[in-house]
Length: 338
Image (cartoon, helix red, strand yellow):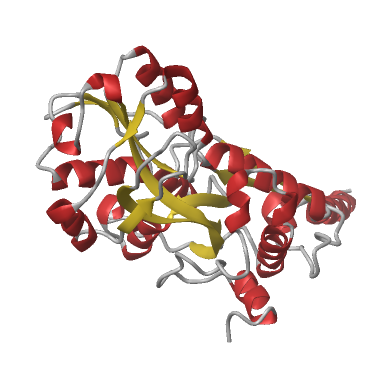
């Protein structure tokens, strides 16, 4: 009898092992079964990807939702979900810990993450790679004529929306204020995105707001439609030189007419919004498809900033970042990488 029980137990264990092997593998296995072309993985399993965007009221959030819609429409068995976040720094941090598969970010925090500098001092992020350029990020410093603020220097002691914690906007805002001799504690900081800041500017709860945004930005236009006295502040002179010497931001001119109500040029700084992918969860074939659709189907994206997602702009903002092998394969295929 003991011998029969041993045989039965052995058979049962073998059967359970077969079942476990057939059913195992989960989400990460599905992500590695994607095959070629732009039709998704041939295993028939749906690949779920989570992409970090930014705060509601900014550019990332609505643009990211449109990007996800275009991918889901054009790549079979792939489901990209865009989610609200604190933007650049948070997106990179959540890629590092495996929470996000894709992330939108300003290129400069991405450089810091890759090199273990700035916000990423002592916590270098190595499991991400460049997918492509999204649009130019233009720092827009917004106040109202009726508030009597004529320069950034006048923001000392004021109530300022500097962007959400972990955002590229907040890092840029602090650098610009520092250039003008305004340090933490010299002003009342509101750590929120432009969507919330817009309402506070409208009712006078705050005096100014910083935003790394697309140009033109619908939220700023909406604010102007309500209050009729929106004003953009200039970054010039020695302060501009300080910013350029201490960051990767470069001078940018917001031309008169960029907004219908803007009647003179405004000088500021800019960087690039880019898309990065988690190299632990997004394999070469899937990255190839995401890149190809992002560029070649940008005309299906209804957001106004999608016009910048072109072959000509595709590598803007890459710098020294590693490029995802799937994106590299596509860019070599179309002749913009050798």
